[in-house]
Image 1 (cartoon, rainbow over the protein chains, first blue to last red):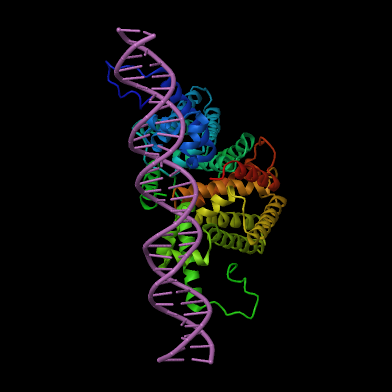
Image 2: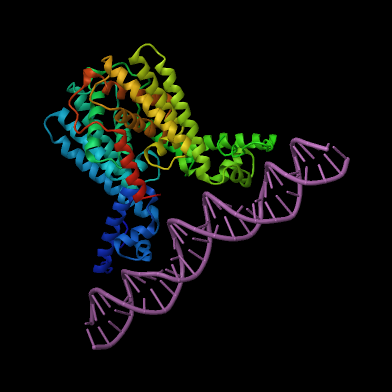
Length: 222
Length: 222
DNA sequence: GATAAAGTGGAAGCAGCGTTCCGCTTCAAC
DNA sequence: GTTGAAGCGGAACGCTGCTTCCACTTTATC
């Protein structure tokens, strides 16, 4: 959706078979990235999509471009999930529902979990979506806190980190959805006001997250 | 300690400088694996140790061998931490103390967190240590549960997974110790009987973990 | 100190993977 | 149908990182 549209106008639309192939590649990439994270190979993606490597590399000039596209889709879906949850009347339910969905997204796309925690370079479209996602998380959390359903000494960034951790470990170990939900539930119990014991340290701010990631990606690129 | 001792007896002890270099390589490897996980390169390790790549590769014939050695050390330390905690009189304190230490180990050695969740192939020495570690975790948890300090519907394997997740996300994102302790504390709150809401699914057993990992490492070796 | 074994550094070899290139095929406009 | 452009596959290329090899240096023994 991003790559193709560098055609201003007065230009031929993409050929039908090309469009079909592009979609196939994207689907294959999503699957393989989900299974193997960044370890998925172009050749593997091409094979699963039933095309040659050349085709993959024309539609997406570099592996990073392909990765960006998949990643952007993920953010889009998370934002959509958040909007759906926000429509719910009950703030507590909204928060819990969203958190389960967030973890599911991250588990399904191992890639996403990896990237959310490590890489800084994001395509412009994804940057916007990430901002939107953060705003939604903040709203969901603050509403739940105002309703007394969630302890007040944690921040949106804390929330994101905590559930990213749970999602990542279940995704990486190849566990199933039930196990993931189990751990999300434990995590949610830890966030209830009733359970709250004083926490060490201060709530994490989003700008701290960005600083951490910037520092890390500068030192060891991997 | 494992590689060198294939010398039965009536054989020269290793030369002094060789021993020194071996230790240096091991230290450098531990540092770099901790920082960059499996992404650390032999050349980087050699450079940090102040030796040539040839030297690294003679002491440790493959990268995996080096990795095994570092990993085995980690397990050893965890078992030692557990023994120390077990010596504590109060089961609740013992459990909490150990869990903080476990997360610290896993965060310090990003490698460990990765391997604990993904790879199956372990050197024989590490296999024994892993068993010992599991036994310790079980004992710490069961004592804490018997004392009413931890909810009874979670298993030792659940515990390991949960804290591995927290440790991994803080390690990968390069967060500091305070933040990690903060999240471990939230997690511990989630484990208190007072907070407990019914959990979906069944407690994870260690044999389930092994099955998961076996399946995963068979499908995508990465 | 002389000597032989042990150890060392780094260049060369090799393998995996992303990217490029080009002759051939397929589509779609006329 | 014909034709030209768009798209395709996969071999070839280059880069990066693990491993091997060997001429040279260091250690320890006599």
